[in-house]
Image (cartoon, rainbow, N blue to C red):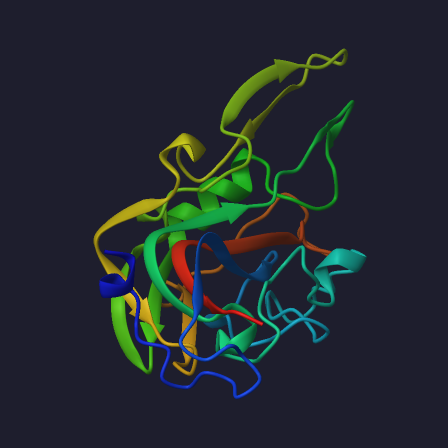
Length: 231
């Protein structure tokens, strides 16, 4: 059954064991950083590890958190720009989730990075998402239609200075993302794009509106069955 769902490994590396594959249940993921103001669109899966993380922010905003600047294993599993490559293999995507990095409460407000309930609401209310393979849109919709695949869900607490703070996430992480009845097949050489866009004329109104702009990492997580090379 697994072989019928996953594209054939036609472009196998000559250094791999020919005719043999391993089948894995994997997470394929890539991130962008959003901040106050935002921009019209930004793309995930187009930048590999070691290069700058794409940012969707206002012109005067400058994210500074080290883990928001350069792609590492934290923010993407791709080692090749726009393609799964031989490092991952061929895949059949069964779920898609958009995870928002979570801000943590302080005695007065929130940490300077991550999404508080305000940022989650702004993101969900104003953002759309398109998932494309080889230039073709395979699925799309408002960001809230692609619930989180992990992370915090939501709670409210009151601090000692009687300020009410809380956590929020894009949907229920227990759902494991939006489930796909028909898996989306991705060959290792297909160009993969996760497009984030703001409604025409809309901008993000975040808690911090200057400097770092409440910089927040958004990660697109694909739950996938993967056929990799045996070496």
